Length: 314
Image 1 (spheres, one colour):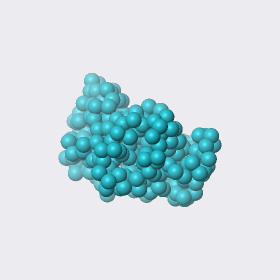
Image 2: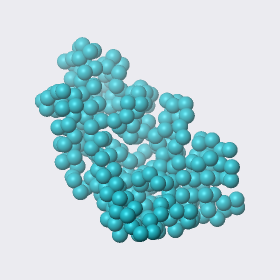
Image 3: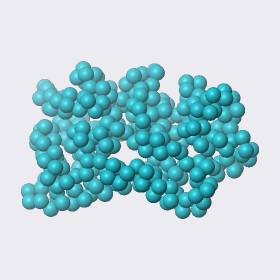
Image 4: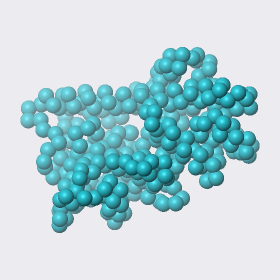
């Protein structure tokens, strides 16, 4: 039986053979960078222009000898089409590469959250860079934030400006700030306003409080962002499920499943761009108002640490 890591190596090789641009991110990238021991799912960022090649690859795998089994998953996710994937949606698949293989989950992005530019790391071009993974890990899940901090600490020698963006430990952040060149400090401060408070905040407990307030902003923006996609999917899926003859996922080949999902999405009005329908500015302002309440703080304090819109919703 193939382990998730063994499967990913095989699948990544097939992506390269099919000339599909990709970057391995999230859990598997954290394993690669030594910040996790194991993970079950494979998260990949696929080049938007290569989606047709990727879909062809999935179909071709089903006709190999021995054949792979490929299926869309029941969890919310859109057709693997540019009209949806360009706007921050994800698409979810189950793959079996052998008859005795366990079910492998592959989650796909084309526009990953909080990532302005897809980039890979210097050690292995198959894996997303530490900075990119850290941006994606800025969620409202408690377990993700030690990863953000760990990646920031690893970046101290590789990319000092990026390190200053991600370090969460108050003492280590102050220490590294003091070692950074002035130009690095200035550049990082434009992207992380909290850094401007370091010279006037000698008390580590006070700095920790500012860090926690900043984190609340990221967490709340992630909640608001996710809710838009969740709501759009639930509304679509509820209507689709009520349709006569509904079945999902089916046992059909992957290409037929894809066509079925595309037709349903068009027929029942799955929103292509949930954030665009609301507006990034409106989403951010709503999140900031909630963050003030969640942190039992004030808008004035929040303004001192809130990241620029281009950082949280690029």
